[in-house]
Image 1 (cartoon, one colour):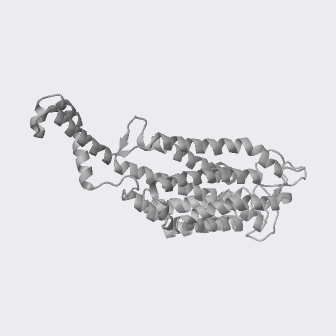
Image 2: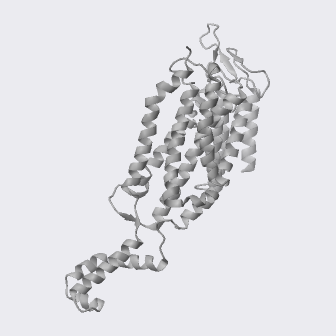
Length: 396
């Protein structure tokens, strides 16, 4: 694996070193290898390939995919068949998956919110300005700032998630994750959106953020979300004169920050409910892996049961239909060793009460509506307030 990874990195660097900036494009920063423009125009094979890939490794696309997975998780895990209870193992798996997706959503939001904060701190421009129509009018490619690359940061976070947890095959997953990271870095450079230095910085920051979010105590994520939410608006207001764009431009940094903060708030409120109802706030001091282990062991805050009770419940469930039929017959008294049918019914009710204590309820309808309202408020809230917020980036 190490040999394959090393070869891919060397191939990536050599191909960039041999590439030349197109004559219709100029370097915005300098002619240094780490800062120069490598965009090719007219577009060749690699540029067209990169243009296709970019939509699938973009943090704006990834947050939507992860959010939809979170919202649809009850249907994915439990199906559409109506039922009131599920096994503890399935319920535990559902909680672990939801917790993992919420943590991933938090990390992807770094590429939308923290990245813009760092833009306004470093203030390093994107590398390329190109004369795309031959008129002699050179147009800047992308938004004004490019250090560090948010797409490379997001690519590193997604790649490290696959590398770290290896969902299918350890060696194969790690090779695949390494290729994802290199492809994202090459794509950003080939399209002229970033320099090699910017994608390297973005990928490095993404790797660090992944380890911080998964190895440090989980209160770090709540603190990071709060700091990002406040600081992102503050830095944009301070740098408002330098980030002006035309109305409707895709490079509106206000729109990026608003987009990221909406999903950051979705993650915050869904996580808040999960920590309150299931995990418990006292476990904020533990790491991501420790919380997953806690959920895997079925030590749920509201549903702790002994092995003996589980055995009784399973035994009763297997014979439930049979015992209901026996209630109406005289044979129930002899089987249970009791004197009357009324006592038989009373005994059955006691067994059913014990069953209720040992069942693990499926996700309550109130939980579904809570998730739905959170998505509705911040999803439609983004669209409703988008024009109001983003107008601050338009020239007066």
